[in-house]
Length: 310
Length: 310
Image 1 (cartoon, rainbow over the protein chains, first blue to last red):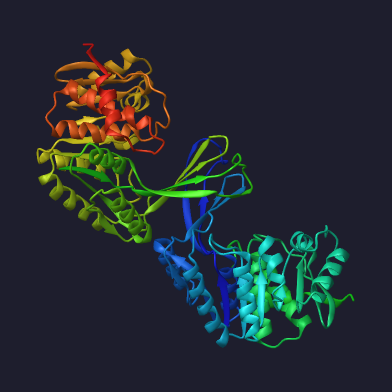
Image 2 (spheres, each protein chain N blue to C red; image 1 turned 120 degrees about the horizontal axis):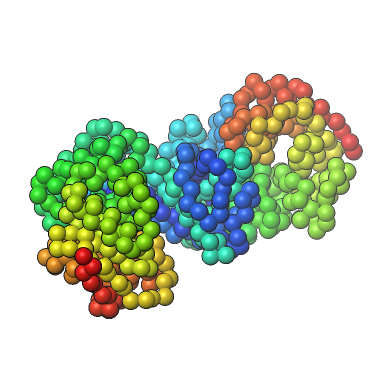
């Protein structure tokens, strides 16, 4: 079983409006679609799509929390969320007639120290059964970067592989807790190392440096240019087949879920990269965020070249 | 007891963002305030602020529906909503750092014929006890203008005074059901009569015409220029004292709630206008939509001049 952690889950609302978004006016929304949102939930959907057992945990609260659990049930994702007092947040994505997307991300509402303690306990009990844990995304008010890193540490101390997928100070502090894997993009890894990372070769260097710092597997996503992976077996580059991108949103989260599946299945590191890149590319072919088709993923994985570059 | 009807209630979410709203970007919301929204609920709050008993009805559904009822309870507004299958909608108001407001109104989700029949039955049973009923705002999918006008007719047939406060085709069709009172602005009354209504004198003419068509009391709001009222007693103009407007949103709804209170208390028509204008002006002094202070309202009503102009 794979466990995904989403501390700052949200109800993602997609608003479609007919014309362009005009600031300072009242706009009628044509239709509105609610999804159980958050990076960890996209990763959980990827695990389920791959055909493996998954349990999603994190915080949910209030009426939006109930709605989130209903949406997960509809998606066939088993959950073991910690119920908290604060309402689960919403995030609104306005898709206008000019095909422009404008997003409004609510902050996660306050979680108490006692509620966080319950979360930690819940996660450690899930990690005891899980083959891989992924800790994904941001945190609500009341959860510090140290709290967050403490979850990584707790999972690692139990000997369970832990993938960390976050950004900013949470990632900076989190890598110090030695997660099994991190998956930054070039901006994110550049921020950790305090220098600009723009090219493929700079990405490879940065990944190797972070790996030497104590992260078993460092994957740097380069968008359309593929991905770099640094691990004990060497530094590898994965090049996916060229595709017509429909919607790339959630493909990084899909990659994390697919890596967890690949680890659980005991694939070699280069095979893990190939498999995860196939799923991430397939996600770009679907208009729905964090959704893909396993047939596309297999075909794209077969077309993905993984070569050792160091 | 006064009964307010809000068929298309919503969770109104106020998003505060720091800079200007930039189309095509991701914006972090600083804070988010949820309110039980809809014109009828603003009217209900006004009735409660005036110190009279009120019951709010309409449709609520799903998790947002539960949240809406919780928010009403917090506001001290008793409710007798019809529970439906469809989720209650949200409306998002983005208040940016340039003090600009950009609104996104979700459409109300589908209500079935059977659910509407339950609403009608519930309303007629409430109208049997109520001294005044107000029917406010728009309708969700599945409710036609004829259905809406049928509610006005049902209440009127029981002999209970009914205030209708809506716009567009709902107002056009609704006035034919002879509500006791309507409260259009100049645009709205112009649309019903098929001509432009821009000046005070055109407003007075239009109000008189609609009154002759069978609406006992026609109040045309002129914003800062006050209001016109046509009724059997004559045509009157109300002029409120000049104030420093903080937030005018919801003052029309407040006016409707205050008119209901004034009718219940058996005030003369000119006194009703003075009282309602005092409350509506007081609403402009509060930064919260549909909230006012009774002390301000009394003072402003005393300063309001009501003169017969025809």
